[in-house]
Amino acid sequence: MTTMTTLTDTTTARRAMIDSQLRTSGVNEEYVLARMLAVPREDFLPAEKGAQAYIDRAVMLGTAGHLASPLFYGKLLSEAAPGPEDRVLVVGGGTGYLAALVRPLVAELAEISASEALTATGSYSLILVDGAIEQLPESLAGALAADGRIVTGLVLRQVTRLASGRKIAGQVTLAAVEDLGIPVIHAFDAPKGWTFA
Image (cartoon, rainbow, N blue to C red; front, side, top):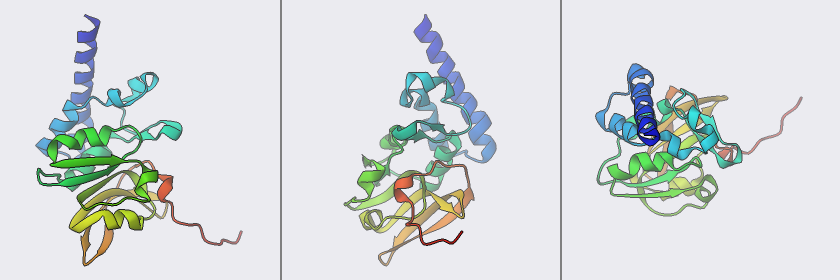
């Protein structure tokens, strides 16, 4: 009885997340909503954080990473438009949630940590980063196939934005899509230059 009640409660919470956080913010693609309804966010959090699974902001997990806001994942999936022919590399935020959302939509998916991304290799048609970066490491740019695309958070002037890019003539340029609260992955921080107080 308790298990059935809990299942109903979390399904209701996911439907409320879709109606009040995603649809109202312009995320209406059916494949995005279907995946976010199907994957219980609480399964990717420690038990003591489970009650925070459907809040409209990130759940921080200390050194273990983060579970970003539902809106970030909805917007990222909408922008990425993963398809059945895609070979996808997910740079995870520590929970595995983004990979779980994307895996059934694509031909192949690999997930690596932020530290592993600094030495990534391969040839992927789509790279997704579960967080905001200050700079794109050369290793990730190199792992993107010709004409491949990347969707990530980007830190610009201390503001986080959803950004996307495509690899053209060997170069990847990221363009901001919209301002969005996104947890920062500090493994991708730009080197700090000299400053004067």
